[in-house]
Image (cartoon, rainbow over all chains, first blue to last red; front, top):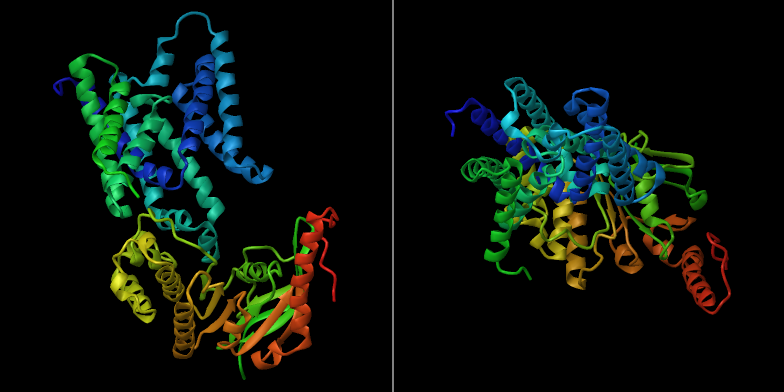
Length: 264
Length: 260
């Protein structure tokens, strides 16, 4: 299958998205941000709809929307003193509502819409791949530079603050990175499925490894492996690549659950 | 001349507009071991948090080594904590290293590793360095937090109920360790405890608060003073207030217990 240029680009995209989602997913799982991930990724649908209606590139409008929602969640939960869960619920449903209204204004069938919702990695262009690689490099560099702070905050937020960690800024940054990862993964698995790559590999890694170094390596390996295997499965079975990638990752999770003894 | 490590000057802290601490004034000399006591709800933890810059001060002034709270390096904090999550994916050495203000790359460097090893050895848990931190006993975890504070090159140690949940021998060992560290490293120590007797036996001076300053002096003088009786009788009154509330005599929200 790799004799085709579009499959080479698809594989490269799967590896890039796997790297980002595996590394960032470690903190999404450790800091119990799975629901925030769902909120941000589903909110990006509002941005995609806005882009399609206004004639802006949906990837750009989706990115701007996801970023605004991530910062909005951080700001509103602090300002309103509400639990993040409630604030995410509001942003999530408001964005979906906006998307439904905007799509209803569109006449006719929009095949490109499904590409953004469920991924269309086979259609990724060389230019998009370069943007993807640059975005992934920026996300990983930021994560590496602030890794100690995020680990400290995950250990104990108040303790981290006492030792001078800029906790609020780091929390906002983490949400921004999740938003950026959603956009990076949009072409591979789509906004509706990217959460799976942010959560499943890291959750499986947390079940197997006791130290963050091993968890990180395993999480990235599983995310990258799921991407490559899922792509191969999609090619062999002639099914949608995004769904196949998520199902490979999910099967790792269920296999782990069945292999591991119940924890006391 | 003895340097002042901590100075509280007529400090007032409010929560939702209601004062939780007021008229708090004291100084702690560098190298001193100070015990902070008071009944439940007296504001001891709030006072420590104000000292660390974790809660804002509504009025008055706090200085830590001559600087505002939160602006001074060299402060180690051992929070009141029941247990580290068992699944937290870090070793003891990893957690101790977190208090150092270095990036990930430098944390793996020789300097940081030596600082971690030194801190662990000082608190007697060098052999636990590679163990998952969440699987240690309560007493061992308390030592990990102490090692973390030392690893930050602390000159001032702030401890909130450091012996809570420990049995009597473990509590004695912890205070003995704290005393030896204080002497060996010339540390200033401020420790909060609900256990007045245990703390009085260890510290150089004792501060007793109950929302406001009651007494500050040498332990032997403080525990026999009228002021401490006054502060602790508030706890009795507070409990009596609770019982009265249960019996249908409501107490105004935020109201202070009656002075004896």
